[in-house]
Length: 219
Ligand SMILES: C[S@@+](CC[C@H](N)C(=O)[O-])C[C@H]1O[C@@H](n2cnc3c(N)ncnc32)[C@H](O)[C@@H]1O
Image 1 (spheres, protein in one colour):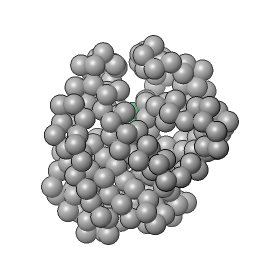
Image 2 (cartoon, helix red, strand yellow; image 1 turned 30 degrees about the vertical axis):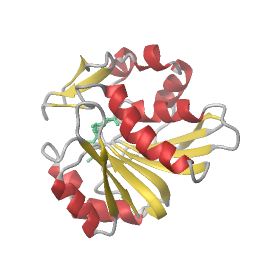
Image 3 (cartoon, protein in one colour; image 1 turned 90 degrees about the horizontal axis):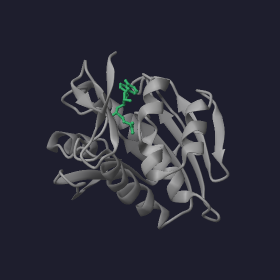
Image 4 (tube, protein in one colour; image 1 turned 60 degrees about the vertical axis):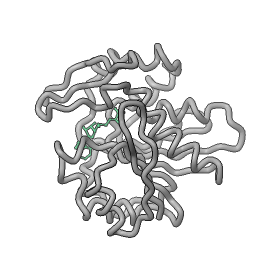
């Protein structure tokens, strides 16, 4: 699989998958999008209710969403995040060393620790954040433990329709606790209806800059 480094419009890096002709993040701004969709509408929304959270990320990629999550909870008293990131095609180390997230966001020690952490093993990255990176195909993952939040960050339904199937959504729904949420940058009507069909209560929310809407589903 050929992957190249690119720059998005907010000055933050993204990667470009040549085979799929798709970037890992919004071209309007990788950090901007990740902060809005996953941190603002996911993590902060849920942290208003509770401070001990299990998060599942679909498509761990560069670890940008995990880094933003670490930064968000760093030094917060009483907070504990158990983060599981599923990634079928781990990003090459040279590319991870080339992205500019730590220049913009800080947290280089944590970023390095995340990427040096063993796969398929729960590792403590900071006192408030543990990480388990799973090298699996999300279609094969079944009955993983119950989560409070799912960051659904797969490539678009146009590029990888098989990851936006009712079967995958049903599995996501089953992996959440009651009142758990799934957030995604995607706002397609068919995706919203399919998520609804497996039991999610869906909301259309304001999207990140450059995108009109995004979706949040609640179990
Ligand atoms: C949109 S990118 C995710 C970006 C990532 N969250 C980040 O911040 O860098 C989608 C990710 O899903 C991964 N992926 C593709 N097919 C997959 C599959 N079947 N199971 C798990 N991950 C998959 C890709 O390798 C890629 O890293």
